[in-house]
Image 1: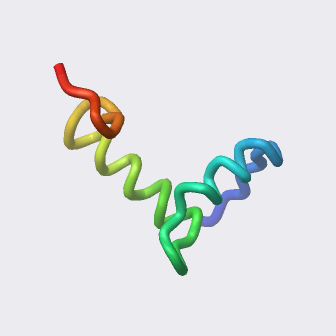
Image 2 (image 1 turned 120 degrees about the horizontal axis):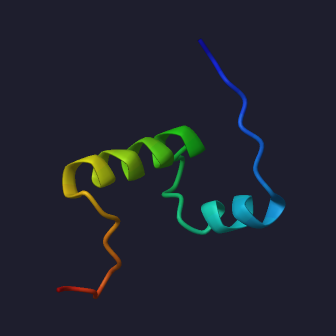
Length: 49
């Protein structure tokens, strides 16, 4: 089943800044969720505890 998710223009612009070449929004979001499920948190580059 396919769902439509509406996002603001500002969020779309932010996503565009992080997409790899030829990467879709769905692929990017899937990667983020996988990272979160594996690590339990989103890591920021250069940040460590």
